[in-house]
Image (cartoon, rainbow, N blue to C red; front, top):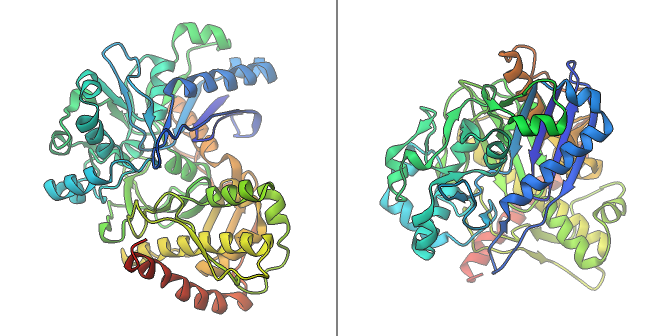
Length: 483
């Protein structure tokens, strides 16, 4: 048996897999995000651990004998979060999350002062990444910075609680901006730019390797027959790729979660910093990946639902057959944007609203806007020489066939829908746990069974191409106007 733990922004998910990767049990525990100031986004690190305890307790209640047979545990987590610990391993402040925008000033200064962030790090310096967050703490909370003995990413704090060891994996650590991504090792030069050294960083392992074993008291609590191996694991998107079998060069998926991601696997480090493409290590050895990232995917739909006092499912359910692009345009920049703009200050907006605009029209506009933002990502990847021929769909938004039909027509590529699209990251984490326990990746990362394949609709591809061209004019117009 193998367990996958996915530490998401809004919840922790756990799944229990059999040796054949069949789903035996699953559990979810909710999390909350604190926003003490505009543009800030924080979480209590210990809330992740309490949620992990809750979901593992739930797995034990559902399947005690099966849980006892667990040999490997894999970890996935939301990337970039700055979790600062003192010398005793105690968090010094709330974790600054991936969608926190406070460090815009530090980003510009770091990028100007240390060009190696763009070369060795392979990415633009954005507020979402970990390095500028630490620079913000260094400048604004010097007493906290002085006490910082270890900097961990969210899933690696959970690992510390599970094993007592400070360890990170390559894919998640590439999102700190302190990694030499091509060499898959910490860069002393990049660490020094933010006043840190290797002593502040965890030991690195590949995502499919063993990072440690579960502590004896926790082994007794959950009734494990032996101390399970804990895999290096991966950042949420790399883990999702493992979950949907996107481990061979050229394989791709689109994730409709809180954020949106277009992910492509590569056989080499392939940066494109001009278009704010993310170029990271994969969770599989000797493999890399590129991502186009938008910050508000289902977050945009959830925001609209909260304002209209309806559920997201009710809103999408009101849209039946899509016969044309929405009559209203929406820019999904609720908290700024990454690919391709790298703009922490831009904000969302509706355009073209009239007296006749109803809830369905606004919902359609939001779904189109997210699809257009993903098209921006596809174009940015194309500039980097990456060709995407088809994508798998994962994340909560993939439950909406209508949304996937829009995305297929906007991207003009087929969209494959796995049977368990909601379990991409936790499934990938469990598979990484299996690889660590078995000591091999052979046969572990197969593509999942599909429940549907959605082709671009011939009647929509040209109209959506025209609508995308109009939509693309909104961003420069708003920036010129000072928004």
